[in-house]
Length: 576
Image (cartoon, rainbow, N blue to C red; front, side, top):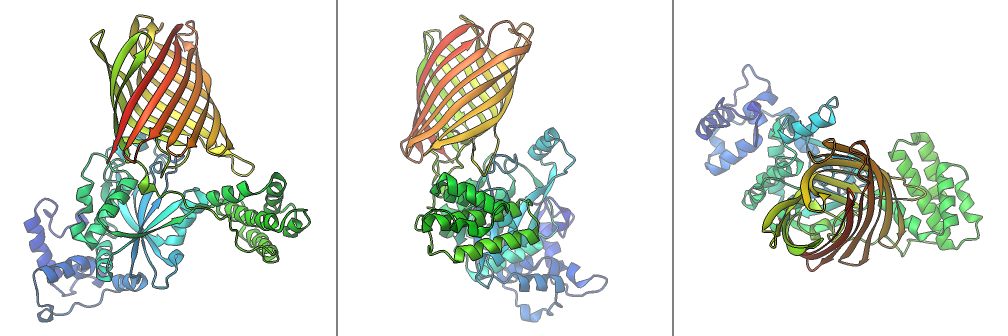
């Protein structure tokens, strides 16, 4: 919803449609230019309204004096001359709070037919770099930032997302007609410099992109499909697909995805040589002096070329040095007798094929000697035991996920867990890419204080460490952790602890996910004399379909010297 008064021609325009219509009719068809610059005249500022009213009211435009030209708008229309539009989804980037769910924007294709020469239409909130993390969060939740549409070269977005942030991109070609594309561009012109309140959860980047598509094809009613408390970028892509607007999908792998693929095809010696060539330690022709196959010589140079491009995008190399080194690698590659690699990177399942972002579950199990029935909900988004299909590997993101348990023998209903936020990134390191793995959690948990007494604990924790790939779809990680917990049953009423966790994430078979974790936290401030909190848990998920899964968890837990074994089997239904 537009909040900027500059978007309305009547002072009451936002709340009074009749007053806005009358002011619009008076202003748009007043083609006089007295005391106003051409580009600020109503018929220049609001070209989409001018065209729409003429069409809807069946106005004979020949009876109205033709308006003078609008130089700025006319120049933009000449520049953005493409006949087609695509919706672009950049995969989630868990290391950025504003981008962990991914990002969508539009691409207006160039008449030249080269995607990189197209224009990207983006919507984003303009934040204050001086804001602290807490201020940033609250202002984002409460609409404290202004959001604006912007227009920039598509190659800039590719460089930002694919080459720097290591995010795969998916391009969804839309079947908009040329007149619909022009209608969208005219509406975009009207939105130049117009602000709206930006909200993280609903009126965000992805939601506002849908307004442009609704302007192009009003009958799609995409914004009405997103009438919910929260809007996740991939959900807007699914809505666009459901509305029948998508003709084709193209995958643009990130630079890091390409690097890791070629790296996986080479033996250790050639991997090291490619790194040395990219670093300038040895010349590119060094690839020919090795006793390697022609295929591996070519792949060594391919990897070196990707690494040089990656270093340049990350500002790790001067442009002149990049050009010199990159051209020497390409010249050496051209001398190989190996053409296009037949083991090219295979396209993964596109994101819209992944499970929907919200879920509910129902099941039962036991905790110690007590049986229970559990009902839970997760508004967003994904964990390691959900199907990996269509999601960023190694990323777990959950918001406001919780469950209630009913213990029939004791006739007791209690909150078992409420995760306000839980994020974990397990991204394996290698010789080239060395990302840090990390986690953060703020939650309300039920914990044992004696064998017969449980109570809800407010806790927050964080951890940092590294992960390694064990081959296939198996990754192992280790993290140092810290946790703060508050409850009146502690002595004193809080505990600040430190410890570590180790774990495995694996997908032995497609649709079968396994997560094994061991964790220990020792009290260092507050209550320190009751021993460590220890947990060993095996969690598994089996995807039955896109919308259904079976989950089985078993864990051994020790809290304040009390041991508990817990097991649970649930059925999960994904929706939205």
